[in-house]
Length: 163
Image 1 (cartoon, rainbow, N blue to C red):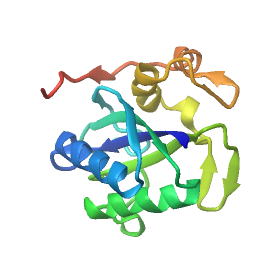
Image 2: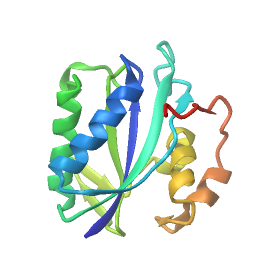
Image 3: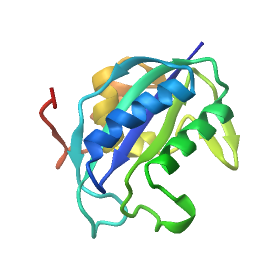
């Protein structure tokens, strides 16, 4: 079984309800166990700033799927919730964005998948929820909590639990 960290994001529709359903779909389709789920955080848009704020979270799952099979599952789940990668603008509004951050200690560079995620340590909107569930996880030689200390977390706010 592999330990996999996945970032969730979105800013269209009821994102928190989408996250809940999407996590269930990921676990079911990947025959995965949910190990941890962060709180939800509201964050400023990144890249294309002329849009609504995003909600971001992270999960840790255990799965026996290989990285490419899991990527296929994540993309199918995104599509189920209305995401069409080929028709959207880069960093634009989306119902659901699922990014595989790390898959065990696998290092991979393929056209469709790079592991660990190459821009992880530039993105506070991923590091904040990730540090909540895996502060001591070492990715690319950097402990998550140390990576978080190197970025500004201004504008990132934890949302109250939905209960």
